[in-house]
Image (cartoon, rainbow, N blue to C red):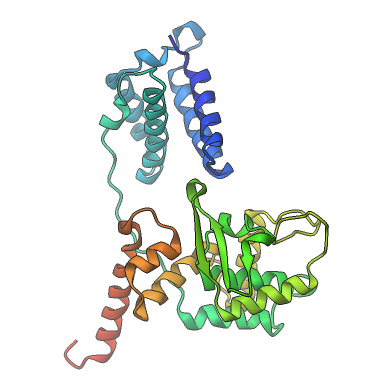
Length: 300
């Protein structure tokens, strides 16, 4: 009989081996820790082995999540972690089937992402470039970060994971390691390429040091630091503290679609595994078109 906590530890190690991000491993670990705590009694001998966790017990656990008035999106995330864990158990031959896949997923009202206008995005970038906001010695680095976020639609984890060897300014392209360690090639726009070159001209030299973006200690810049600088610049330039790195990704995709880019091409650029994930941007564009119609058409 396999014990629950050691099995969870084995699963998290397997996630790391498969190249899952630290963020994913940390979040799955936290959700599975809470899952294990639910089944633990004062007497540790009462903890059922994973082979005895049947559908009835999992439904009790799921019911407890509802009783705690957790948001549907939170329940969906915890359920996804447990399903992935039981899929691992099935692959390892510990459980004959993924019983967690039979649990009903709570529905979540679909919300369209709020998208910055092209004018707002460019005004923010212009304010950093001309020195209206920000200060030396970080302006060149921060401008390169913002230009790549908006000009290439990168996830923040992809941005901070960039190494010097991943970027070819001569070819105006870069290699991105996305979710699941999948690689893709992404073109770099002229403005972004120029910003990166200006940053490289002042970037501290350290032999054998690979990270593209460095912090004040000349170590790899972290995703939290990027979120913080994006928020600060948006607040200073536009008085809007709701802007975050993913806001630029939404804007990148929506503006490409609005200007006639093919949906499948946008899927490749964003690194989406499924086209349905990219299709949400068509709904955003339709919403914007409806707003234009309501403002401009005499019969609206």
